[in-house]
Image (cartoon, rainbow, N blue to C red):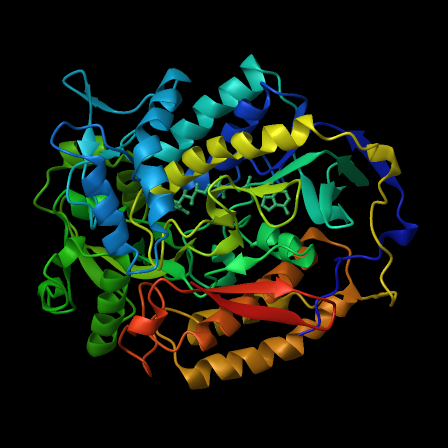
Length: 543
Ligand SMILES: Cc1cc2nc3c(=O)[nH]c(=O)nc-3n(C[C@H](O)[C@H](O)[C@H](O)COP(=O)(O)OP(=O)(O)OC[C@H]3O[C@@H](n4cnc5c(N)ncnc54)[C@H](O)[C@@H]3O)c2cc1C
């Protein structure tokens, strides 16, 4: 596939220039939290493509995993994370996550996050594949919203950090292998802006929108992975996308997540005959790792000839459910389902990207001046399958560590940003066109059918062929955010399919029906993609 360096031919565009010390892209937990820490060192500016609260973070329900209980230990948290990660976790990254996690969560509390309490103690719940109760939650099942509220209060009201909303980052500014900020289009003021900064932090989240059914909001289109890749950053572990086992299945409505914590509080899965089935698939039954539960549900749906299975929490009374899961309870009720009396129709949906922009344990990419954290980044901490509630924690821990490397880089920066060319003209000027709006829907369908929970060589190859064909759209120039997102999605989808094709085994979230077993020689090995030129990219197998 040809991957041009930029989405647009910028040579005839007039950019307004904005100079700052730290450019942060994204207003989820990773972007907001790293902005707070960057503020100690210089002038910070955050951009986000829609409104501040439009992010995966806002939708997080279950909570944040961290060792707070005296019955628990970081060794156990480490072990649970490694087991869920199915032999692919970067052990060092996991050690950092579990050891530094509690301090970061305490800081979140000091910043004003109100976690739920029980008898004046922080209430801890248990989720799938956790061996202890270690999930802090807020507002019952509205943890993300509360975290966003608290961080926004610090960013906007206490520190006065500017946030440019409705500003879509198109491409990174690079010159002689270093990053100097990003090029953007502000769709509120309808102008192009060049943000010039010695340090750029990408915190653009995941890419669930690549699938027809997803728990992710509309903004999760993988832009950060795509523009970082075009600029020369590496993408790693792109074959691993996690499907959440239980989203509410209401035909015609977007998937709504039914948190793992519901199973943590004793909910059971039932087939069309009302029988439990999870014990046939895993000794931990409903609390088995997510990939196992998602595949078991797909298998059961196939056996039943249905588009969903049932989730039953009717052993809990309405009072408990209203308090513990207010958002889920209300959403169900709105759809005519009383959780205390009725079973919930549920099906899996694309949820979390384990892969992403490859970074070291300090968020540094291979491009000086460019850092990444949160769901867009890949340290290998989640391996082949993320443990529930480790993702918000990841955004905090690695969003914080960035500054150990970024600050020395910032302090030694002595270039004149005004002299940096904003882009390098491409050899071939692009032609303008409009992208048929059905492309995105067709892409989502293709990914769901051929690159979903269960994959095989034939399906992946046919997906690759289709994407090769669609990738021609990258050579044209479009004029709306929706079209730019779709171009990014096609680019990311292509790398996901190539990664899935080269991993001829099953591991964690990547299940190949033609290679159903894990193969020892793939254990701990990662596929890394990098754009070398417009004509070619490279794939490497790294240990
Ligand atoms: C329904 C749901 C429930 C979840 N529950 C939990 C949970 O209980 N516990 C847990 O640990 N994890 C949970 N997760 C996962 C977790 O919420 C995310 O992985 C995490 O919030 C990601 O944070 P982030 O800051 O990296 O990205 P996000 O929160 O997704 O933020 C990304 C930001 O980047 C912006 N952006 C993207 N592209 C561009 C662009 N081109 N230009 C400008 N801005 C851009 C977006 O608008 C957004 O502001 C859940 C996810 C979902 C969807």
